[in-house]
Length: 222
Image (cartoon, rainbow, N blue to C red; front, side):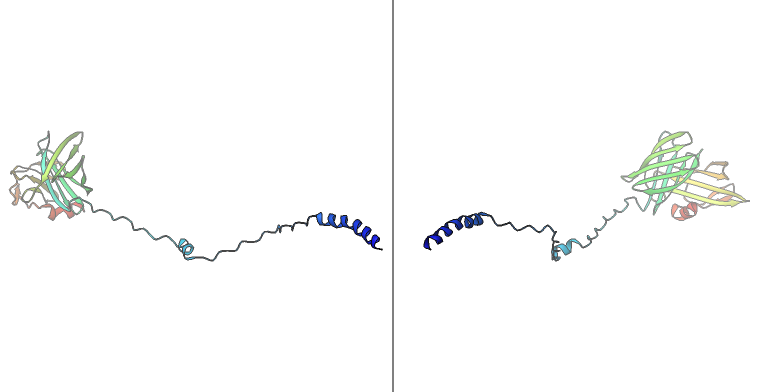
């Protein structure tokens, strides 16, 4: 009987070894996607979602153009005079050589003035206490340099109504006493004005009271 058990044990051992040699099946991976957990917001991520702070716009620099200034000077190669007056961005000008004249109106900004009148254009740069530029009258062009002036020098204008006709007088006076002007009835009839002395001007019995730009600029530009 002992021999029988020995034989049975010998024949059973290979089966046991073969069974042990079979590797265990690897667990199959779960192919279903696992949703990622959403992280809780932190202080850093919360700040990142906030709207960016508004950036203040740069301050605009103040316009360097004078608020109030009067310029007068000689027109090169013409011999006439030109006057320009600035009052808070409003600009009035006058060009006259005794034979021809032009009343001008325009604007002033960034130390530059531009004025227009009948058949006339004036452009000038303001620097160093002077207005320096060019005047174009019909088909002619001249340069000029006009320094700042104080009363009684500068620009003057007078108006009157005589028998339904409009009378306009214009004068420019320089610090050295030189002056020029013209008196007009309507747009076509007129003559050179006498030297300007600052008082009431008589023209064929018509009294004319010259005014400086402070007095006439608003009415002239309206």
